[in-house]
Length: 269
Image (cartoon, rainbow, N blue to C red):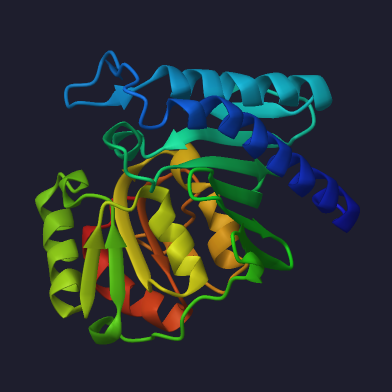
């Protein structure tokens, strides 16, 4: 079990990793960077040198500072460690936003203690915002200084502001129907947010984020940010969301339960 001192040290280190990634990725943003399509994918799944090199920069620093830690990253796979601790990385979550010039992408960095992610960072270097979650609280470090994060008090679907990156991520008919039913009840729906929408939920400006088809590196950094701000993140059946798949993030338990009554009908875990 990590001590408070360990958490302090590793959370500070996570911010160093975010700095290192930003030094690589940010110069490529809105630069006309070449875009590749990942092999083996049928739909367009873009990847750039910024994705690959950003993760490589993070991995190098981890290997130097904590050689016994494991690493799981989107671009370069899994390296087992000996400590029981694993860094879970997505150098550019929202590559489609990145290549479109939309500043809603982010670098995701999580530390998993072998049971669950305990530290999470989402860094958006272009607009200078960094969302950090760890035991004891979540905070936004940005142009206005350092501010504590707290989820909203919205408990009803009819009053909720819902975020989703792209409804096209719902491939199954029952998933589409469940999302359509919740969307029809909500006060407002916004799309295209990638990881940034989860952080807005932690900040209290969105109330619910519903997605599917996620990977562990898409969600693990966001779980500590949301949970330590007062929210909840689970699968559509109410189970553990750290492996990805169907994910729902809610501002509080009441809203979460209201969403699960609908989403649970389409849960596949």
